[in-house]
Image (cartoon, rainbow, N blue to C red; front, side):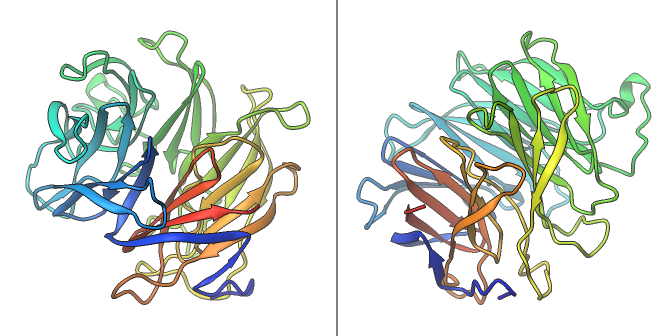
Length: 377
């Protein structure tokens, strides 16, 4: 692998409990003994897996999608499951959006609603059981924008608010100052009355959603350029550390980089004074190899379930990394798990991780496999 010596099939303070072959996944969510995996490529859509016995996970049901549809994200609350529909590797005008399912019978998910979006559809989103915070393409705008959708009645999802970066609303006479869709909403995350939103090569924004019908900009920070990788996820820490508020920001190691190096890494940002977010440290993983489209090496996605100062972050071919942010000015790696390549693969691409409150970790690979892990950090 790299100069840090974490070859495939190695680990520190993280132990494998169970594994199953599974088509490559984009997101894994876990609730009440079941894991939900959104898959990367059609015809695979969403899998529901019984993980009550973590040593022996069992597939309960699997939803397929038509060719040309990417349904790689899934969120669950109670008996409601949301999945994205996004056009994928096709020029066909397929309908994208957000599909809603009743999963009271896990073996027979039943579609009960569909929130339609224009263009490619919906990319990432989060869901708090009532509202979905989504990144749709909307007619008249350049690139994905921020939208809040009310699912009080899941059969009739309704938009309640939207926000966009000035310049996106071309139908309203605005003119973007960037190339194409470089500045677009990627991943909104809610904490309280704030929405923390990555905006790809537009950096990130913090929005005040006290009035969900009128989200207001609190602040924005954009460091791309000079840094080459787009902003992927903005995740506030659970509690104050040394009396201050911090947020972790991961860039993504992806083909849309401005320059080949450095590889994507993680930022720690002080948001105590939220109108002036200030980066205070970074975490980079040493690597002396090459990051390619087939075998990326770099930051991607942290576990969004934060209970303390330990953060678990997927690093593509660098596997899963465990970071201690007790000193936010000097993040320290305290554990890692780098899987063996899955069935038919020569590399790993650890893509997403879910952290359960009992310390169990659910790790999916972009190409193949779900691993259930136990943290001893």
